[in-house]
Amino acid sequence: MLSILVQKELKNILLSPKFFATFLVCSILILISVFIGINEYKNSVVQFETNQLIAQQDVEQASSWMQVRNIAHRKPTPMQIFVSGLHFDVGRLSGISTFNDVKLVRSPYSDETLFAIFRFIDFAFIVQVVLSLFAILFTYDAINGERENGTLKLAFSNPVSRVQYLFAKFTGTWLGLIVPLLIPILIGLLLLILSGVPVTSSDWISIGSLIALSLLYITFFIGIGLFISAITRKSSLSFLLLLVIWISGVLILPRMGVMAAGQLVSIESVAQLEAKQEAFERARWEDYSAEISETWQARNQEMEGMDEDERRAYRDEKEWEWLEVDDAARKRVQSDIIENNRMLMEESQNKKKVQEQLAFNLARISPVSSFRLAAMNLAGTDIDLKRRYEESMRRYKDDFTEFTQKKQAESGNSGGFRIEVDSNEGVKLDFGRNDQTLDTSEMPQYSAPIVQAGTTLGNSILDFGLLIVFIIATFGGSFLAFLRYDMR
Image 1: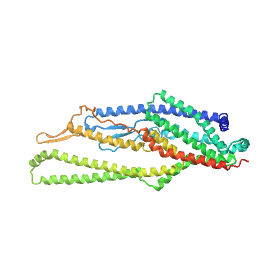
Image 2: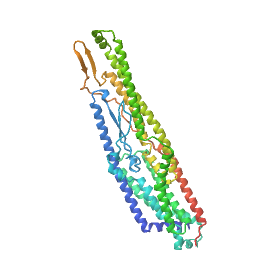
Image 3: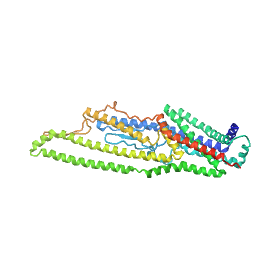
Image 4: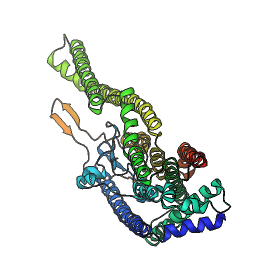
């Protein structure tokens, strides 16, 4: 009897006009999103390689190691085809130099503001919004619609239990929705392979996990549809309630969690943080100016009582030593400024982490948030994308700075100019060699941070578990409600 009920449910779904419409719409959306995502990924790779080549040419054109500046670029990932996440919002590159802190700038949306208005529709968005709505459309009248049509009594005139009937409803609906939707997903994966996108084994694990996550997410909405249909007697009322639940869960609750976290945990704005950095920098340079002034006063006092020839000879003897002392003091100031900026950034990031975790935990009251967060974690386009790259770029900056300073010391050319004062020839300025070619073959190269599938799965375990809990709760509620359902 159970198989007969499942077959009946499958026929009702597959032969209904709304199934053909929803299947067609979902197939078109999924395939278009994958196709556009592949093209966007390829364009990003071309831009990434071109920018790297330009940065390398700029390094090779430098005439001294002190003038060497590098640029580290964020590497595109194939997973952004399915879950764009924060890929388009985070900067694509950061300058790497001794006296500037790392900061990702020039995000794709900042360069192409039109696409920031009409954002990229990826696979995760289609599942999150479109497929969840379609799941509701197929289940809002699963039970009360049968009662209104009189087929519910007819079904129970046969030897079938309520548990069997509800299980058949779920199984038939699940198979009728999920199995046909796997067709465009598999075609999309075939398109990915034929397009020559370099997908690693770790990426395939993440893609498989993303599909499993999507199935859990759609299963939840099938369950909530059955639950609401089992506690209402009219299909019009259940549809209205499900629409309110869908709007609240998809659009309102995730944003309310973020807004509440912003009120509970306050952090400094970017403008306030930059104002602190600028204030420290200004104060430090003022201290440096006062220190240099006192130093030169002391040097002049050393020359008191000397005649003009003795002063000139003394300056000739001490000039280079004084320049080195002044330069060392200047470098200490720059180092202090960089260290202070880094400390302020770390403090701000630690506060942001607390705020982010609170926002995510509050937003997870909605299964939509669990799905979205897990999808971004699996794709590596999550909230830690910016932090992950900037930390790796700071480590690279330390290696890059150590290398350039070592080469600068070996070459004996600081990249600045040398003042030579001679009593016979006067003042001479030596700018060093400007036509020399630097050997950059040993220069360290930036490597993008690699996030393995095991790490992304570990970060998504909580959200997978929450979705399973939500599914169990909805189906448990559906069974309890249907056991007491009045079929008259």
